[in-house]
Image 1 (cartoon, rainbow, N blue to C red):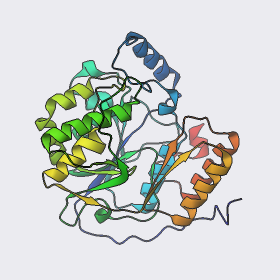
Image 2 (cartoon, one colour; image 1 turned 180 degrees about the vertical axis):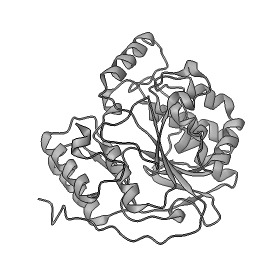
Image 3 (spheres, rainbow, N blue to C red; image 1 turned 90 degrees about the vertical axis):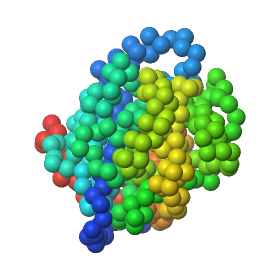
Image 4 (cartoon, rainbow, N blue to C red; image 1 turned 120 degrees about the vertical axis):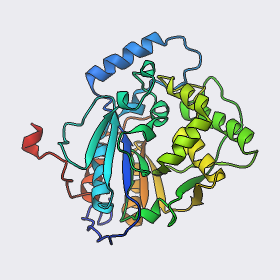
Length: 337
């Protein structure tokens, strides 16, 4: 049983400050949308036999939707109300529970991909090549996956230095040095390619994966890095499914080159990643850890297994308790019908 578990977590007052405005960017897909599934199946059929496609390129779990976006957005509303605007990059989709709101803009892939022949895409790394092209995006922005959450009140300096440099949060896991193998998953092969590139550009050194945390970025810095490595960005953008020839963009090339070029600094932050869906006992313990620790950032990752009904209920109850206050952009029960 969870100890005193799902008690309401009070909204902590946040002081106003005069730093540069910050936008939040999400990438999101509804993998249960039949129309999207049909398009994905059609495009996957076209690519049958492509030798460079990664082993996990079409796995359904990579597109699984558990309403994480609703509660990740609530975490922004609850713990970072100072954020200027939120952009959600999608495949012309919109959750049924969200309504029009001046603080949220949905951005279709077609608005940010210069080469429309790269669409439709089912490769998050390809999409990440173009986030800096969102119309109206501020200089300072933070990229969130939909399974990232704020665990407590945050401020500008949790993402950027006082002078506005990007903060880079590295994990203890070292980036792999070997070359990609045919049975690699997309992230592993992309990490290996990224290490090889960084070794050529910066020099060989021990490097670590970016932690499963939000990714602070500056539009001008990303634009410059893209110009410097245009062929890499263009190549990744062209891969409609994850490929053995991909590179990690937001969590590899951009942060490391930004540090090398003096626009970012390595930083530490209290964060936690849990792998959810193994079994009820494991899931219960991990959720209890989050409740007791309340880290600044946390990530709830899918495991390859399909979680039990009991684990699904556990997660639903946790979300509703940790983020109890509906955001202004959420429809009421009657509006959703």
